[in-house]
Image (cartoon, rainbow, N blue to C red; front, side, top):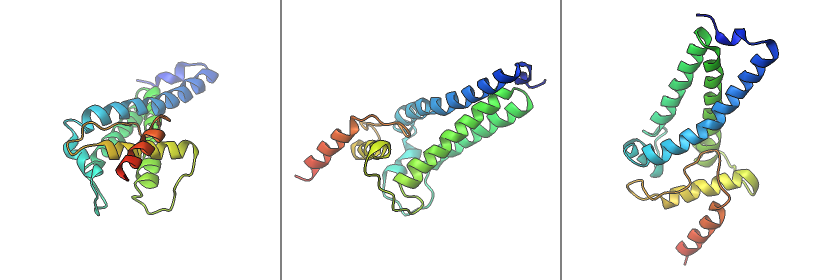
Amino acid sequence: MSILLNYLPFPYVIIVSIAAVVFAAMGMEAVAWSLHKYVMHQFGWVLHEDHHRPSKSRFQKNDMYAIFFAILSIILIIIGIRIYGLLFWLGIGVTLYGIGYVVFHDILFHKRIKNNYHPKKGYMKRIFNAHTYHHVTTNKKGSHGQAYGFIYASKKYTPLLQDLLAKKNK
């Protein structure tokens, strides 16, 4: 079977390809949010729990989720190359989301690679506040947490985190 994107006229193939990458990358935040709330903090807590506990280990059971999505993107890219070109671009979008997740979440926030990055304001500070709030509000069984996003965070978590930390320091 030939690659179906080849049948689109020239400018449209580029537009559709870019749209697929953007759709997949942005859509992954919704997928990751849902997976984080309804799987990782429910029946998948057995793999996610070590992410919420102090650890000296370089690898966590939680990394299995990243491996799952890496395999998913590889499969989409391979099928996209061989059969249906649109899946290739969706796989690229999933991959870009994964790179963003690793950089923002694992490297910059959790410092799995040592760095001195501490955002002072703006988007990155908001992400850091939301994720800090998520870790502070998650109980031993994984439930009752908030702020399940990885790349997007609502502004509401900044004052919530400040209030929570002020109460703990009293």
